Image (tube, rainbow, N blue to C red):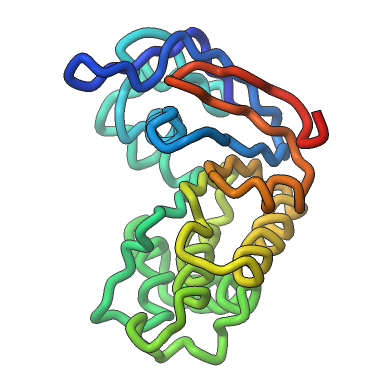
Length: 222
């Protein structure tokens, strides 16, 4: 599903990733952990093709990202969902429209769009808030809205960058329970997090980064 071969990335002389190799199997759920600046976000952005590595190769669904033309990148991203740390919601659009925008971009007809949006909102418990604006939602509801937006197009891969950094322990557990449900439906999930409690809670494979290098790769227990 995701294969990373000897990937390195540098910003203005600062090493973000250094010779990283990693494989994520189809349908797997893994955590990327490490301190701030360890390289977690950079790795997710490279997988999403928001950036390209200085060295190395990344293959997603048998497609080598280095060989994809810029004009084909939007088509690649249609197979992925991304949950950003800072929500990035459209504040003047309703809950429904914030999710529907993902499908509008790919030209889905209105008749097909509405049931898919409602199914995604129902999954995250926001179907009764479809007409609300993001500013009226709690932090937990806003993050659930971000999850609905990320999964409405049935992505093969879901990438989440610190999805619970602004939430308390109870709300964090709710978000991770939803991510687990998404994973059980067949989506490959990669979550960058600094929360040791959530890593222990879900007990999935953990890849630990330190100074841009993979320092550990195994179970939460290990």
